Every structure is written in C-alpha cells, then in structure tokens.
Length: 249
Image (cartoon, rainbow, N blue to C red; front, top):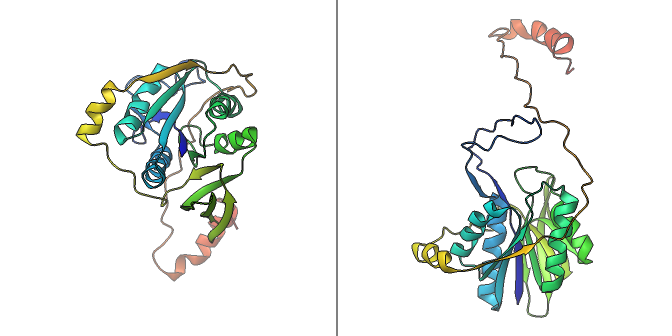
C-alpha cells in the first residue's frame, strides 16, 4: 500500500510571534519552527497503516529549504521517503494545494493523509482542496480510521455535539484530528538514520497567487476585568453594565 502524508513547517506553538517590518509577514528572528501538530498525527497514522498493510509512507512538504528540518523529523519517526517541493515564495492555500496535487497525482497513492489544518494560517482548506483536485473522496476531522482488506473504510469524524460515522473506499484523502492516535517520539536510532536518508527535491508546480496579504496586526488588548460586587446586591448593577457597556444582553 502506498501512503502519502503532507506536512507543513510552522512556528512553534510556544513562540511569541512578532510582525515583521514589512507588516505582511512575521519576524522570523528567534522563532523556532516545528512540524504542525496535526500533521504529526497524520504521519503516525500513516506509519500504523503501513505496519498493518505493508508498503511505504512518503511525506511531502511544499516550501523553502527550511522545510527539510520538518521532513527530517518525519524520516526519524520512520517514514520511508521524503519529498520537498521547492518554492521560496509565499503561496495561498489554493496554490499550495495545486503543487501538492500535481505531485500526489503522479504517485497514485492508496491513502493520502493531512492534518486537519496547519497551525500557521489555520484555514483548514488545503487537504480538501487537494482531494477535489485529485477527484478523490475526503473525510475531515477524523478521530477513528478503520481500513479493510477489500478497500472499504469506516471512519469517525468530529461534528458539533458528537461523532459522525462515514463509509468510503480507497483511494481517499483523510484529515487527522486530535484523538486519532498518539504520535510517537523519534528514537535515537531513527534520528541517526534520518541524517543519512536523502530528501528528494523538486521544483513545485507554478501557481497563480489568488490571495494577497494586505497587512498583519495583533488582536487588540483586552480591557481589564472589573469586580462589580460580591453578593446578590450587585446583580442589578451587573445587568446594567452588561447591557449598556458590554452590550451583550
């Protein structure tokens, strides 16, 4: 079975983000980067599928040479091959999807895995866009995935207030959600082996820029909290303030 996992190189979740001097990108000075956490779940699921059905796991990332760090981590986790689709330019989600879809189409995989979203832009579009471009069924926010020998798939996806059970068939695209599995830590043996594994580099398919960032800004600072009172006598004042100042009732 051939399994493709698409991963992204994103700022660490604990990094304090600063807006760059150009006002349309982040200041990368002192910023640590990592594999997007949802993508780690997708890589783990790909490895588990391979361990059960045999075959290979191929990870793909689209971006600059900086993405090699994240590809190396995936290799250290145990994936078989890594492909970097090189492009130093900033792409919108549609452009990223076009580049990934072109490479995936040539590979003809049985399973394509994404994280539910990348934590940099958080738009949760690329996985489903790729599925549409490939003409494959897709299931998002997957928390349980069962593949059967006959190519049928039963999975559960999160919806508001519960889970939805979905039946489909391979080949298909799945977007991993937290709870699907617990990603493994790369072993020392895996880390050492990853240093000697080649990363295949290809030029990403050119894509038209359809979305342009005009400006970045941080959210406005929240107003400090205020204690109106400590007993029932404060209720009328609280209601008035919620109505007149906060305007939420």
